[in-house]
Structures are given as C-alpha cells and as structure tokens.
Amino acid sequence: MERLHFLMKKHNVTQYKLAKSIGVPVTTVNSWMKGKVKIPRQKYIHKLSEFFNVSPVWLIYGDPAQKPTPADDLRKVLLEAEQMGPEAIKFLQKTWEAYKEAQKAYGGKGHPIRKTRKRKTA
Image (cartoon, rainbow, N blue to C red; front, side, top):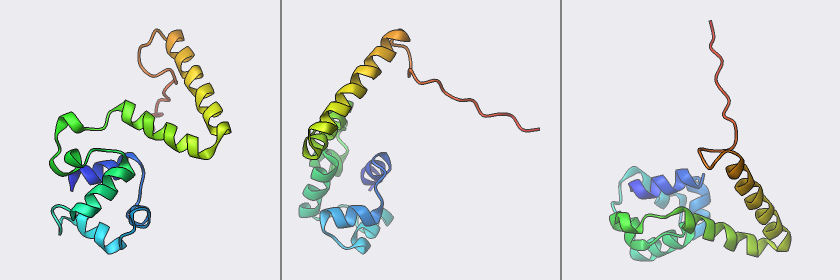
C-alpha cells in the first residue's frame, strides 16, 4: 500500500514497531508492504488509521480530501504530549513560541533555520 508506506516513512516507523503497536505479526505488515495483500482487513485498517491518526477512507482509497494535514499532525503531537505530562506541554509551548518568533524575524518566508551547504569536493 502506497499510503501505508508514505505514513511509515513520514513518522519514521519500522515494520517491527508498527506490527507491535497494532498487535499483528511482522509478517503481516511485511505482506502489506510487499503488495501481497492489496488492502488489509477492516479491523487492521481501523488500527492503522488510529495509529497514524488518518481517515480509514484515505488509507484505503487515497481520497485527497482525507489526506492528513499539518493540523492533524499537530493534534496528534498534542495528544501525545498530554499523556507525557505538564512538562511536555510546557516544552511544546516554548518551542512553538520560539518558532513563531523566528518566523517573524525572517518575514515568514521559508524555514527560519539556516540550511547548510554541502562542500564541493575536488
């Protein structure tokens, strides 16, 4: 499944971690990734959609209207932070404020962190 591969790469999740997180054998995830199974069973679709915080419709059919947005990603991070406790929420708030300040300083254009250039080798 293309969308599953996309989500795993985006969230830096291995087949092993995904399998353990949703309670399936690693061989099952491997068969999804290799295309041996075109669409996982319905109960697995729901577990996958909950794990990645995406719509089951998007996961199955790829409906562009259901594609995860940055707001969806932020919502997932905030839910995870709530589970970690108040220190995590404070850290996220400070990080967000620093990001907004950096955006203001750079006029909202591009990413505020300076990109490094690769050195040319002779």
